[in-house]
Amino acid sequence: MPVLRPVLRPAALLLVCAASLTACGTPDGTRAADATAGRPRVLDNCGHRVTLTAAPRRAVSLNQGSTEILLSLGLADRMAGTATWTDPVMKGLEKANAGVPRLADDNPSFEKVLAAAPDFVTASFVATLGTGGVATREQFEKLGVPTYVSPADCGAGKDNDSGGDGSRETPLTLHTVYGEIRDLARVFGVERRGERLVARLKARVRAATDGLDASHVSLMYWFADSRSPYLAGCCGAPGAITRAIGARNVFADTHDEWPQINWETVADRDPDVIVLGDLTREQQTAETARAKIRFLETNPATRHLTAVRKKRYVLLSGQAMNPTIRTVEGIERVAAGLRDLGLVK
Picture 1 (cartoon, rainbow, N blue to C red):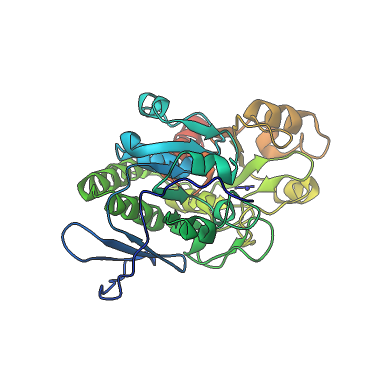
Picture 2: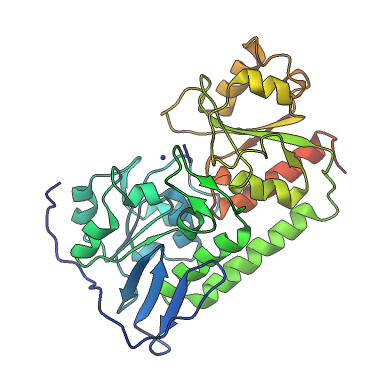
């Protein structure tokens, strides 16, 4: 998504050497091994070997996507804090979320996170736990606090060193999202909950796309910024949405995650439908869907677009445009939107 000297607090959990464990591969590239049916648990996550000797009791989630997975797994009582929000919490999770301290709406300081005495820290993006983010994984791990980053951002063909928001040679699939759910469920010892959540998400995708033929429809995804807009490339979460419904992304020829593309190029591509990020944060211009529509319908370079003239808009939360469980919500809303617009049956 277009993303010091610490106050020392006792860490409740230490990383330990587990050389005797044999890791077994999982399809999303994260490996896990159990010494027994209980603990310790070992994850090889994004090049970091993470060992947990007990299920976390004071987890801190530094991105909304990670937070909503933990809340969906019924783990609010094991969370010491959340941060970095773009939207209201996912529907149905309001009560659980209300009981978890919010450390910051955006990135908190390293000291603020440490003050929550975390025994596990998870994030959706490499940048959150990297240089210039909250702190590096190594900084947390030196204090005995294990960390986890979503494989959707650090694996699955994602290159975070290519500039901007990174690029993908391999398209993201929901299989990777499901893998993150299973990883976190395993970390907390709630594997059955994880499998039930994955099953529900798969059922929702099947229901949303059953009988849908959108092969003749072209889409454009606009996340934020009116001056130099962030538009979805081929292979991130919007790509997974587009493939699920069988439509075409007009910028499927770029592998950048969120390339900034000028409006003249958009006019040349002339999408049938524009999918708009409806964000509640205030970091870029044209964050809300209302502001985006106002811009599209008054700007000389965009007001004559087919989608604009025919008011073919589909609104998504910012989280639905990220590789999270909300991507399933994105599939549902885009499929329903195309049906409402009369473009598909």
